[in-house]
Picture 1 (cartoon, rainbow, N blue to C red):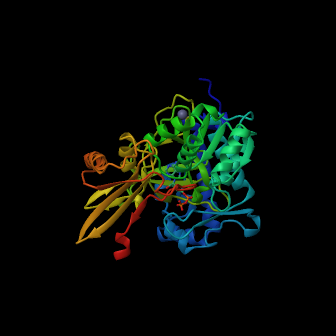
Picture 2: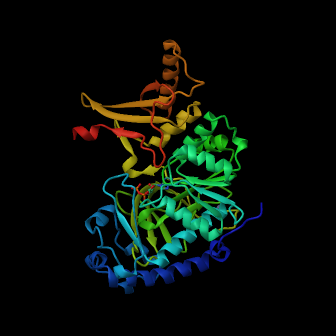
Picture 3: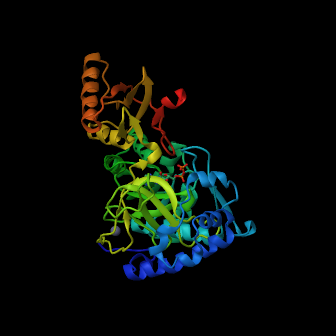
Length: 436
Ligand code: ADP
Ligand code: ZN
């Protein structure tokens, strides 16, 4: 397959040159942050570090980390590294794990972010001949604005739909013949389900690709969405703190997401000790942004659990690949001492033939953790025979036990009884937190 790139020189740059470029940018960035962000200068001073100590990427590990709590402490402008009058935009996190964090951008920062999204769109087969339907939320959330800007840069005809109003999404998708759709995977699954309900077959739409991210999703969910929309589904990753979506994106090989390493250095650390782990080991993803002017975070701890792969990719891109994040360290549930990621449960459900409409409830009763998994039946699975339902529940429960090693109570519920998501899905309710 012929490969197309948005920025071939950078995306296929030989590793040696790329490292030299990163080192040069890092030296400048550390100086910029040290001179303009007193908070970070304080962290460096505590370690006895000056910008001269950072000669290149080999010295990155010496720098202090930044975490979400630093951003909360310095809210709103304590991390600002340029005069506020040079900033042109503010975006904010979705607040999935607590108080929202804000990020500020100069025009240069917006341009580099949008270029990252443009690379993702081209890698998914996009060109100026495409009609890109952006149904990530617009507004403070970075999903809509990021993909919108990327789509413009590629020259695609852009539909700034935002999320929600699914009937209108479908009408425009059909009437305007959208060829690429961008949204969260849970919303993509919902749109697929709605198309089916309206009597459309997957081949009735003009879509060829989808660019889905902003939340964890499994390979099983990918296959489900690809089938229901009749497309190839690509993953895209990002976070507001590093700009937004587009920090990393999938190429046609779909064996991990290429990180835009000319703008971001990625490290994997042991979340407990902070020690940098070798490639291939699982740990917490840490990003250093190399050219952002207004909000240039150095060694930002994402809490996303992930693995890096530096082996060459047959698409020709030389940038390191990150695996699908399993979820954040704070999404990990510890149930009766066992570490459980919601994505593990999702894998079992889809493999057992259920749609990804589920809710996980964890509680503590008589000092013991309980795990309840509510799974929706599809209309064709639905039966009102109690015996049949109990048998299905038992089978699913056994399948989950086989993977997790702990026994959940599975409850099959009526079609449409679990709320659909137009943005990031909220699938876990941890009631133990209420007791603490
Ligand atoms: P919030 O932290 O409030 O959700 P953001 O909207 O900035 O704020 O979301 C960034 C987070 O979303 C990432 O840190 C990661 O946990 C998750 N995320 C983004 N893209 C993906 C993806 N493709 N796969 C898994 N998780 C993702
Ligand atoms: Zn590749």
